[in-house]
Length: 352
Image (cartoon, rainbow, N blue to C red):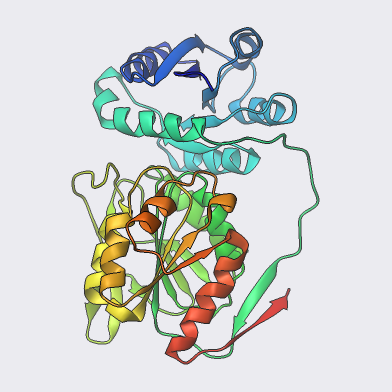
């Protein structure tokens, strides 16, 4: 990689191309080497200019972004950040793009006046993408789903935070869990509406219920709640029951939703009755909150470097002393259930 990350913008909107070029060029670590109005122009620019990261619109004339992405991943794999419209359909398409090999997703600014709202997010996502090693995508047969089983319901709370690469990591973890797994609360850095599509997708694949959280949702065994994009989520307790609050507010640790917000609330109300998990992602969101969880008696898991798309958030949590166990992604589901035995449950491995 060169001293400055070379970025190519692919978008049919001249306004978006102008905004992205201006905002990304403000960062001394980034260099916008070109902007293409469609995939055909982009193809020639990729060969000629050799970008290190691409921002890619989904809805474009001549060839849609997902078709172009699939071709790119087969013949010229590069880190791609998807730019999608802020709609439920845009969220569904963005999720399809992530499954096709995109590194991350962000929403498209509606106008030049919206630039300030997304500039931090845009720069962070491009920098994170630059650190991802993208491999050629070929069609492969789906592997059988391995699920773990609990012999009885547990009542601890699992709090999970993730960013770049987290959509795939979360899917791998949640699909492996049994229908009576501990209640789970999740912050995944994704834009508004995209989290809804992501939750619906996971709900169709998992034995547990997965839904985008709304204020007042109960955290119960067999359910995972995902913080809605652009809103913070906090764990609350009323008597013996846990539930969530979904709130607006400023960026925390450069994000909304913020993992730190979720983890700090979990430390406060769940204490030793919680298990924390920090997954792949760039930056330090979650490290301080996870340390508070550990100080209040929670046991925490950090994803290991080898299985991370970006070893940023788990590394920061480990360095500050917040992580009790470092595990590869494929061993995290079993580790979660092993820790849940503290609450009187046992598990076994099975194959569906």
